[in-house]
Image: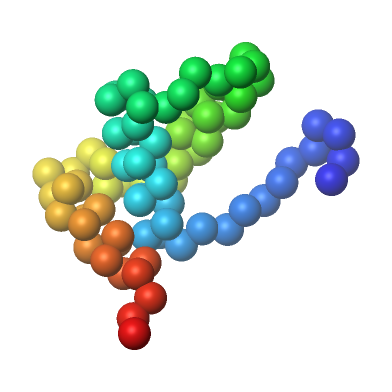
Length: 78
């Protein structure tokens, strides 16, 4: 990795939605431990912003249902 360069990570839409919801629940509940460095906080804000820009679901009335379905789809079937 080059210093200050970009890293591309691919997520499925289910992964992105579930991670978005998790980050916001942790933040809202104060369960996210305080970052040890300002750079960590900025990285979390940036991740949240990127997910927010990619997802339309958080703004719909069916958001909770969509998150529940996405969570279930991420669990490997036996």
